[in-house]
Length: 284
Image (cartoon, rainbow, N blue to C red; front, side, top):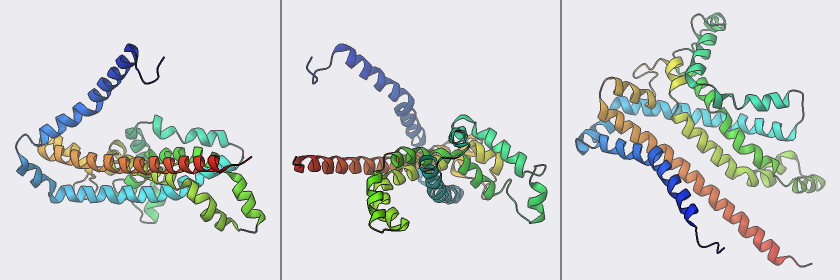
């Protein structure tokens, strides 16, 4: 059968996929935009430049960027160890990485309260040193760090597994040290995965709600992130502010994910061109 022509079944499958995606993604976005602008542009502009919303957005960015920085370092280290090192308990550690996917963020926040709250296991030690975590930004940071843990690691593991180790062996033979090997050979091969993992982590951190609500309390102007601002605005029936913040946060997250995906596709095209050129220039 001609690959360029699609049968009836293929078109039905495509239609079902489009309807499914439209119902889950497009319809809510349209409803959100309609709700935000149903009273005109002025209420949206006032909400957009609200001091409370800006404070919440800045706090969200501070936490998210800090989480991305930590995951960039330790997530990459974890992925590297899981691929390149063998040790007792490695399968268990690999399985533990997916716990944030399975555990509700609300449960995560509650577990942190059991550790750092006033009646928590670690509270006496923290109180002795004057450290406050529960209902403070550090607690929200830890919660966000937990829920975003797998994204960088799961993005990096397959890339590290597929690294061309022959180049590393050759560089070692020529006298290159480990630092030079990393920056000159390994980093160029993993940088796209690093960018994509950082982007997914950033988007996940910005959108976290349940865990930061429980451990942070959502105090306005203090521990209120953008998602908590949206929740409070809906609870107080200030719908325009909630819609505006939702559009702003959603647009930012979608944009960074789209840019990262574009970078990834561009890098893949470059690699395909290099491989094609190498195969064409090969002479037996």
